Image 1 (spheres, one colour):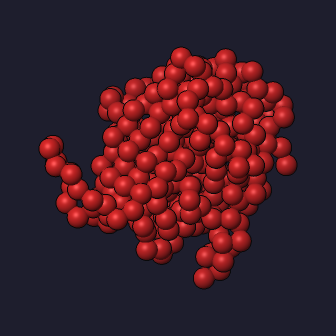
Image 2: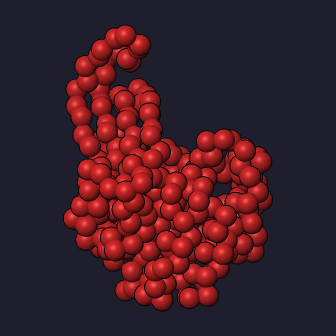
Length: 305
């Protein structure tokens, strides 16, 4: 199997969990646990694909700092090809601090190198050595965003499949360049909030229909309600797998990995949805987006039940 190319955001997540009272200015609170994990939607998806046994190459940028060292070594330790992960001395690697509990969480992010990837960085990769191109965080990739449509079209002309996880638009403008980009995208993975914002309706089935362009399959991630897509004009839904979550960070990115794992093996659509649901659920067993991602055997065991 040829490599899956994953391009986009990568950063470090510092997770403080189990606070009794939320910190306020001038006060200090204690938490029950702390972990440092790999973050960034694209990087979490890449880790999930590798954990499932897929050959993966990652394309992105980090700073020439200790955080960048951590990102590179974490990907390399998972067996991911990091030859496309550039280190830029002019940048600092992005960091997110998450203060989380069973009730809620708050995030503080320094974007740093997250938005520095450019089309030329991806163009330099030999696309004919890959089977698929996946990119996450459309609205955060400011330098890459103007070239997305051309990049996906180039991937198609080289025989690759393409997929995009749009992520949230921090400006909440939801500009139409995303819809133009989808003309060269096979799979779109929005969550329920993103689908409503992009399509202009909160009705699930109507939102999926509005996204129809004759090319792109939109797969909606619905959290505890599972996932859904359209099949021959009818709504096809798969329920969420039952897991007691510890932390939902990156669950949607692990869903992407599970769906793509089955999709690239030409599994039936319903099975792709089930693999996505299982991978998203199992990833919530521990803190952070990557620590508890499942391997293929764990997914099969959950689906068998």
